[in-house]
Length: 138
Image (tube, rainbow, N blue to C red; front, side, top):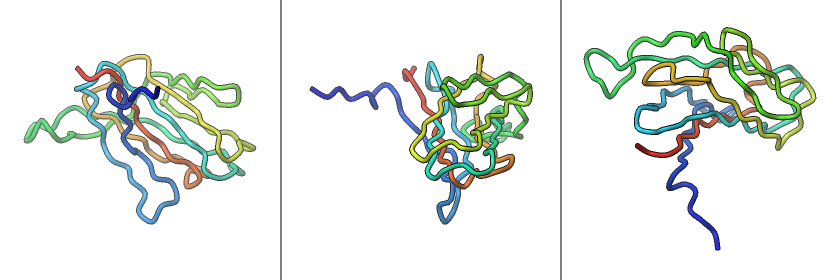
């Protein structure tokens, strides 16, 4: 029997890679107990694809919208046999030679603010899709 894991773990597209209109939207993490990131490699990586995570508090004008974004200083953990761990600027690197179909997961050690988003830094980022996975609705 298949179990509906999506009832406790929702994925929100944060970066659409090479699609016609790549998304770089804010994801509200306040309504979930946990959050993490999944990076799905859509084509072989020839130039290291680097991303970083930014966060924002709620806007003063509307608490449902993000305020000004800032870089997250915490170190990201990338759990895979081929992935790279970011530095103190919250960078996530998908290394050269990573094959299409590979999946990397990453998280932050603590909640940085109410909203998070994935930001492109450099490399073959158009060959990667990123999802913010929200776990355990509050």
